Image 1 (tube, rainbow, N blue to C red):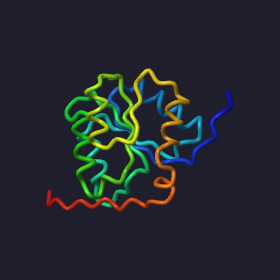
Image 2: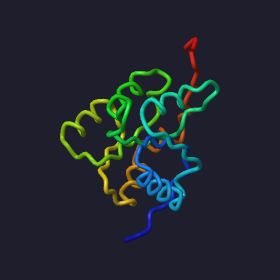
Image 3: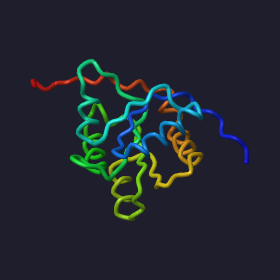
Image 4: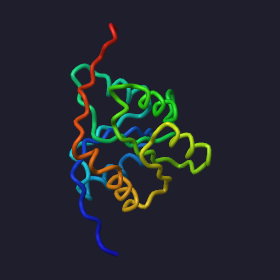
Length: 150
C-alpha cells in the first residue's frame, strides 16, 4: 500500500476527554505532518471557552469525541454549527460509538466526517484530507469575538 501524502499542517482543536486516546491522535497527526498545532480540551464547555476566548483565532479543524462529561460532543456540534462565527470550522467526529442514531445525528448537525474508534490512523488522515480541500486551503475563518459582557 502506498504511503499517504502528507497533508498541509492544520491548527487542530482536539476535544477529547480520554488522555490515552488524545495522545494517540496527537502522535498520529504529528507523525504524518498533519498538525501545525494541537490544542486539547476535555469537553464541550472547555472547547467553547477556548473558541470564544477574546482575541482567539479559530482552528482549521476540530476533532470531536461524542462521549464526554459536562457538554457532550452532540451538544457541542449543535452549538458550533448554529454559531455564525464557528460554523465554518470543519469537524471530524472521532468516537467509540457506531450507533446509527449517533452517526445520523452527527451528520444532521453537519459534521464533515465520522470515524469510529479504535481507528486505523491512515483512515483518519484520509478522512481529514478528504474534507473539502478547497475549503481548508482557501477559507480564512473569522477571528472569534467574545460579544458577551462577562
